[in-house]
Image (cartoon, rainbow, N blue to C red; front, top):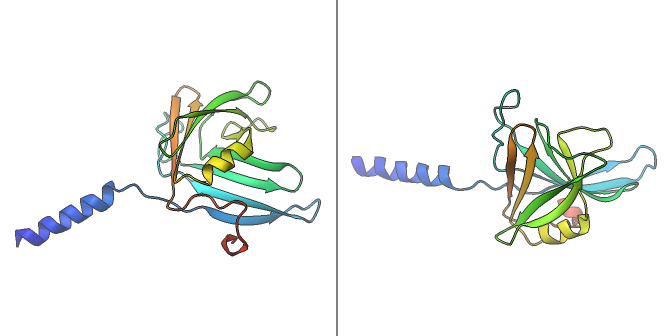
Amino acid sequence: MKKPLLIVVVILFTVSTRAFAWEWWYGTDTDEMTGKESTRALLRSTNSLELDFPYHGENIGFTTIRQHVRYGLQVYVEVQKGQILCRLHWGCTVMIRFDEGKPLAFTAVGPSDYSTDVLFIQNANRFVQAARKAKRIRISLEFFQNGFQVLQFDTDEPLKWPPPKKHIR
């Protein structure tokens, strides 16, 4: 009787310690000014940030790649809550690691509306080229009174960009 219980415990432990991977979500939006479609790919983080009050609790991030009809190719990272330290005019440096490669420095800037939960990564083409080969992306961000935190994005399939029509939802 003890053997089946041990097997169940081992299986549950294995499943609970395996890194969960999300898949890229692909979609389109219509720009109301031009009537043209923009394409996007979005990936959810597999971890949650550890931020102090008032931002504690589950706090996931998203990375988005967008080909916008008016703004061109953009990459941005957003969190559910928190204050990313990077300003619109001065910018900052963000370290990004693709798979097990060396961390790469990217310049980033805050959004034009001065929100603190979104960050635009500059040199979007460089990011996209690396993401097209990567199954893990780690992005280090500095948060107000919480230091540097790393968002991790795991996926079984690297980014498909531009996305084939069959992937767009």
